[in-house]
Length: 496
Image 1 (cartoon, rainbow, N blue to C red):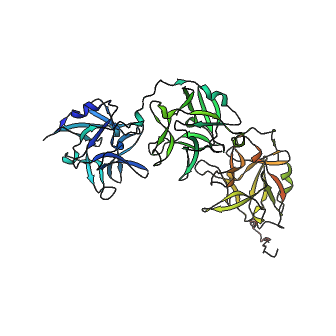
Image 2: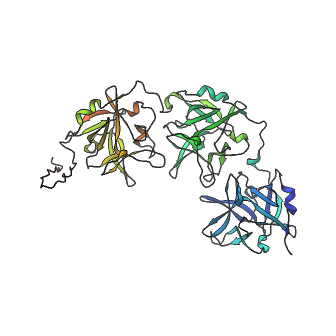
Image 3: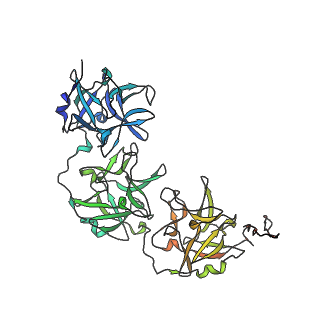
């Protein structure tokens, strides 16, 4: 039987809160299945709540479909295959499907001109996938619409529209003790690192990392900073919009519009969507905070609580003004014995290799690797070299700015502006941020040296100590001239 352009039995499900299911020719149901980074539409034997979709009517005989989490189905190309995936929050042409009917069933055509079909053995061997791959449409393209289950967390309608304004959040502006946010399930927002990214998740027990500093930026917006000094920001990962903690220099993605309802606060991201507790979004079986809701429901409401003084954010104003100048560091310029730097916790700066990179960390016991050679480069700046002759430099790793030891030819990233306060030294990197002892920055539970602080606090201050070996094993390269020169090299063994 030929196809007829039109919605047919799908018409009854437009705007239905119960949603719609689609039964394939083999009796299975279309279902959003998580296969790593992407959610794909597959055919499963038994109907479950993930088999329910919301149908949206469009002009010209087209329709859009969203899953129970609010993501749009879209045609995407993966390795030459035209998969139907569930990953889009902002719909485009790839999310629109032309609807036909045949024998009381519906047939969809993608924006690539091919019909959606149950398709075996593509992408994942032996699995029934939904792909936009058939022309003409055969029996594998026919789907029978049915009533969906009513377990639709995405489609919960709020009791009242939220009101623009800071509400109970206002008392926490610049409060040194910070603020915690309790979600609708009683958990707390907390930065958690997974796969190299630190996202905001919901944890059951409140801990020292559940505290944030709130900055009022005007126009009803705020920025949030975690306990390490990183700004929260909305990001885009495969069409999902998680809230990550990775930005030291704030931009518009770090600003959130504030609303209130029922003495709770609601945030809206720069993509125009509300932040919500979201299950199974970026990571399977994990509650993350994502900027995903077009309408603010109960999962968007957060209750602000006072933070704890012992766990307040490390973004604090300096106790006294810092003074540009070399101060006590000047006596160590080109000193053969080198200089050691003691941090506020009594540990010493030392180059430590991890995962192929040598970063500056803080170690408890001073050793020969804790010695550095200081070069004055003028304009109040210096360069530092470790005992092997490598220059320290500020690097950028996924939005973090650790101090690494890897450069033999110095550039601007190897130059540090010097300040003094209370007889101690403070360094500022070429990114405009002060170097600070930083816990859990590049590596979890490790004290690293990073160029991260907009204001120099006590974690940026370093005491100076004379080196404990006669001379760092830095080899000074010979000067290139037209005459023969003799260059003196220093080598040391353990007996020295």
